[in-house]
Image 1 (tube, rainbow, N blue to C red):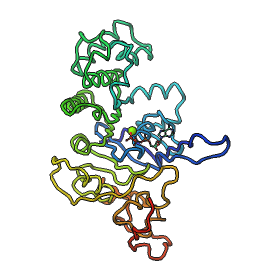
Image 2: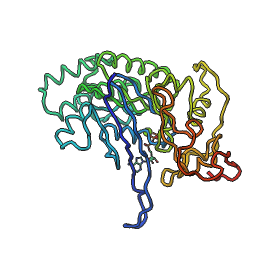
Image 3: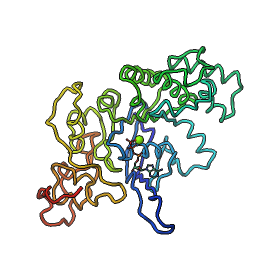
Image 4: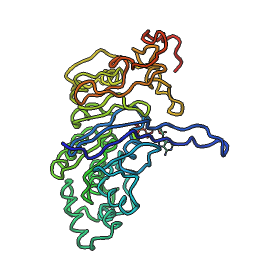
Length: 343
Ligand SMILES: Nc1ncnc2c1ncn2[C@@H]1O[C@H](COP(=O)(O)OP(=O)(O)OP(=O)(O)O)[C@@H](O)[C@H]1O
Ligand SMILES: [Mg+2]
């Protein structure tokens, strides 16, 4: 399977708003030095606690946010190096499905207007062509021609998400980011929408990025995945391998926190202490060390590299990979005394 998207050392930093002009209050390091590859036709999961940078990373993937540093290569082409017209064309191949089907659809528009809007903006199709295409799309997502002139308020949450999906696939994209596509939906509809996504992926040869807090969904949907913490990838690669043998203490904690019985193996419960630290001044070494149950002294200052531990299974952890061969502070492999840690 070849790559459709590659991120090379991508960082996205936002200036902290407020305060005096010309007086920098620092940068929010939403995404820091992320490298990954996504293969044609796969579903790539992105997991991690709220605020760890999942949506920002996805926005950088599809060119909605310009990286502060690094490159985004879509089908081998650097998205941010393209002239405006070329970028627009490329961008049509990449679409997004949002979490909240209530706020992502314009309530004043009818279904026809909502779903045809991307075609309307592109300006290449006649009214008849657009109408025929919208009917085709509605049928693909389990709605019908009778729904054309109804408004979002006439539909249930699940049906609205179907409308959002119809709109997202209207220009025949090859790459779709699904940002928590079912987390706002009732449990009963949840599985139906996931099944629809799987069905469409097969029929339309789509590649998905699937962002979710629900690890059971990620396990079900994803071929490969990345576990993020405070803007960095802690572990990535083949999702079966990660679920079978999580290497990073953060991944272990995330999986252990899932009480869902759909996981085959039960693991010892690891309770994470404290909250996720601020992305404005993230810790210098491993970003997870303050909350890591296994942190060593060296983790405070030496940032771990993301290293391939087995085929397509990467981890960024000194416990797994050992400290790098550089000058290290004395006692770096001593455990951290947690009594001293202020999170
Ligand atoms: N446009 C922006 N301007 C300033 N800060 C931003 C912007 N977008 C995101 N951030 C900050 O970047 C960090 C990462 O945010 P992001 O929305 O990517 O996280 P997330 O993992 O998607 O969270 P959630 O699970 O809650 O959706 C947060 O600290 C957020 O406040
Ligand atoms: Mg988000």
